[in-house]
Length: 284
Image (cartoon, rainbow, N blue to C red):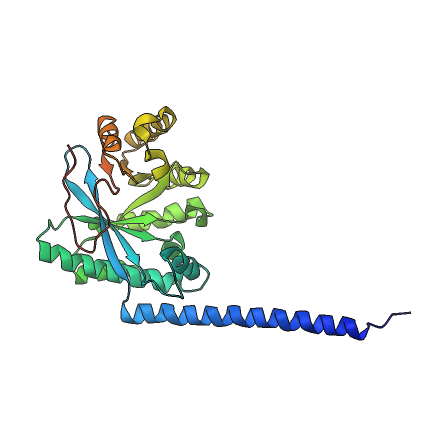
């Protein structure tokens, strides 16, 4: 015979349901407010765009800039990480990255003209692999955008983020081949930071390999890191790929990397992200 639940049990169940419902409502309301905040950022172009220089460690010339877009700090998005984490949990990844691409190119071209920089200066645009592979992405959309600002695909390097998002490397290499045929180039960042970055290097054959900052930090004094840097440098030389050392923060790291034959570098010791295009001098 089935036993009846006591009134106390019903009260407990109701209490827990109300508490669950209240928390769910709060979470949904916060999500709605964040989503509305994201749409306002896009509508009003509230992102701040920074340009971090990438220098040739051998001759001191500025190769180009990585473009970084940062949202305004607010209670909804207290830091940049929370902002991009939120976008990753929505269906707005494609729309937001297209918006970022448009803002980045527009602001870069404006500064390029104002500062009278060489027209062949290149930019590194962070992009999620799913955006390039998205079936709704219109072929030629980025070229049309570049043409409107008098730029060419050869000036743009797509820097792939979230390598673990690539599941079918054979298919994704086919997609990248299409972009390469148009003149775009590909960079893989965080090389040496884990299995996904190494697999992406071997499978996708990037034009640029960006060494992870954990490899570069105090590389001048750490033989284990030096060994990995030498291996990746040799791989790059064998595959006609360019190396960029990220996260350089000390002059000693610059001197070691230059003597080791590393071609390019990026980091606070070479130039911090700035809203203007800076051409810092390479420390002697």
